[in-house]
Amino acid sequence: MRKVLLLAATTSLLFAGADIEPLVDYDKQDVQKAVETVKEVKPAPAPAPVVAPAPVPVKPKPKKWYVGLDGMGAQFETASGKCNKLAAVVAKLGYDFNKYIGIEGRAGYGVRSASHTGGGKSKIKENYGIYLKPMLPLGKKVHLFGLLGYAKAKVESTLKANPSTGTRYGTLDETSPSFGLGLNYALNDRWSIVAEGVRLLHSVENTYSLYPNGSVKENDINLDTYGIGFNYKF
Image 1: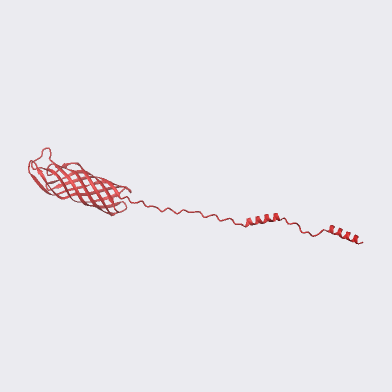
Image 2 (image 1 turned 180 degrees about the vertical axis):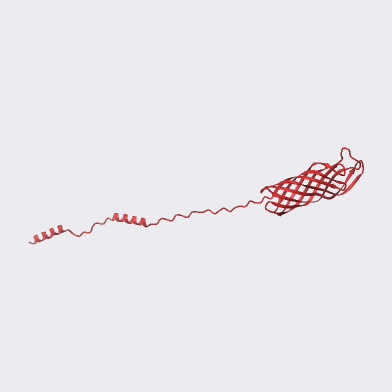
């Protein structure tokens, strides 16, 4: 009887089944967790763009040296008269310490002779000068300048083909204080136009020979030049 009861219980258990927990798929669970972890990871912020500093504008250094060339008319005046149709060319080399003061050297040569009212003909042979140059700006392109210095000039007076009695001749070769005034107009940072007037010789004296004989001493001799030219800075 016991055997029958045990067999019946075993059969009932097999047919009824048991509540058994299903197997866990650990591989699948790990993959799911990894996906969730990736979703939670926030992307790194994009790096801020590197902005290069704006270049500081560099102002060009002002050009201080310059050369120039002037075409000059001239008047040579003595006690016996004057000669006002002379001409010369003048070369210049200068240096501007700043916009208010500079220094300038000059060398000129006469290119035309003319009749002197005291007789004969006169011509500037050569002239030289060294000057302090004060300047006064009148705007961005224009400045007024003065010339204060010392000059040397040589003026030759010759007889005409048919000299009259008492005509003087000879060579003046003197130095004296020299001064002038001018205006400079800048075309750009290199080129400028210059207009000026300069007294090369002031109140000097010289002894001239007279035709046909004798001599005469003349005082208060002046040599003035005036003209226009160009300067080039470098």
